[in-house]
Image (cartoon, rainbow, N blue to C red; front, top):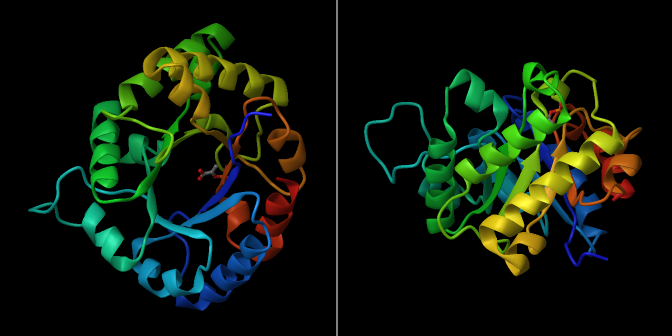
Length: 249
Ligand code: PEP
């Protein structure tokens, strides 16, 4: 018994138009039946204002925010914009942003701090590439633990910050890390969190797993040691696929 409340979160990535708001409502209805866990959807910024009134107890979040309050940053979204639109949280550091937008861990830490300053909860993503994993488990654990520490914002606290371990090789590929790979990585990350934040906050911070989670594998993953929930991409786009993952928690 860890005392950590599970979070089942969906990341819609660059998917979703107003026509899909019915899925938000259907997922919110499933979430409202689970008072024992948290459920969230990280939506495209354009859907947040329309989705927020449908969410009930479910968290609605953005997928990124800028590290500055405002300014000449064409195409970016600020934390205040997310808050005003009705979001309660945001992702930062997703591997697709680290890869395609070349975001560094220092950028990610600054974004997380700015999101918190504007009252958003944060899910901070970390994970290793296949190339790093193939160098061996110890190298992979060291790499991801270092990435975690470099991405942690000043004042990181479990009341607003959750970590998501997402092996890059498992995202959208259908290749899932095995429960023993996940348990070993999460144990290494727990040690790193306790060292960085101290016993209380280090043990209380949630660590989610993400990477090809589905209704078929969710129960095994979610009952693995130190797994405090899941961050789900493809299988979060409909209540039919996301429902069994929520039910497995
Ligand atoms: C993700 O986008 O964070 C993710 C884990 O995607 P998928 O579940 O599709 O692998």
